[in-house]
Figure (cartoon, rainbow, N blue to C red):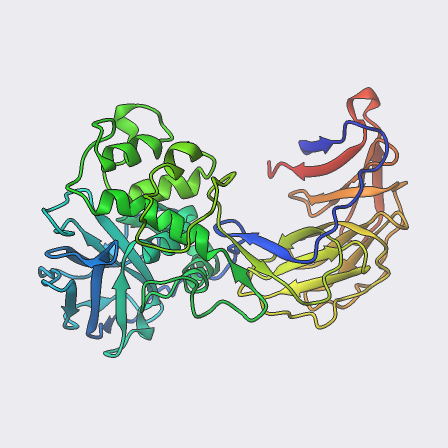
Length: 449
């Protein structure tokens, strides 16, 4: 039998569903897990000339080293490929120019640009590191302008953090091109890499993101970037940042540049919140800032539309589209990864107080209905699958659903302290009671092994 993991309520009664009017997607979580592959024999392309500027805290960074990378393709956080062989540095006004003397592995290669070290105003800062994610190399042209600053660094790092371990290690497996591509696209919803401000030009109508949180994070980085550098614990601005952004907790695990520090914060958003928030100066260069210390440093994009009505659960498919179960509206809303509504007014299909949602390996969407003790199955286009809704297996207030490696669905029954297993066609396999070990199960997950 497959190993199962369940979350359980502390009371026997079914939990009330939270009322919400918008969907929040946390960046770096629902980026998609697609099965698309990179081309087996990509055609290299000659790179286009690029221009841009490097600024730290609203002032130019002089002499920063510029590098353009193609994201790795051999695994998560695999080594990125540096594309510029000759030295490119920023001038007295922070400007730089890449003449096009680089070659991309292919037109679809995902590229990002970094600026390291340089003089932000008084002396060279060896710990300065900033970046901007640009997307497919084939989209770059002679008119492309890149503004690298703390804001573009925050937007790029928070979006790419699931795929990186440092400024030179950003990549994905060949089987998750869609996920990495979606992550690069997320950058343009958060920040504008041409102007260095938030939010980005791709933020859809009806969606919102906290500019104040992005600017606050940029200000935290700016304390180190606009200094002469330092090491964790030395009392300097950089030393304070590196000590606070150190999930390992030892001197050897502390970051030594601002990209790694930002990555650590993005990957550990509840780490040392107070110490990090205290780094924001009274006259911080990026405004507006958060009025008070947050609970964490996650960045969420909030979507509306699609007749959302008390959304109770969501799932992401292999393309990165997000499906939302609406417990009050008895519908399912589908959003594209960028937040566009794909489902019109919402999909229906004998839904009744839908409480959980999951997507199987074939892309079908399964919804647990607390209102009539059934499970509905929708195709990837939102139409009702044959035989749906399914009623077998003594389902009772189903609250969670997950799939095992055989494609069987496991449903946690909050009303009967049991777990139901059904096959891909909805036929009941077995109902487990588990004795006293199962009490009011509200969530479930299946081990892939």
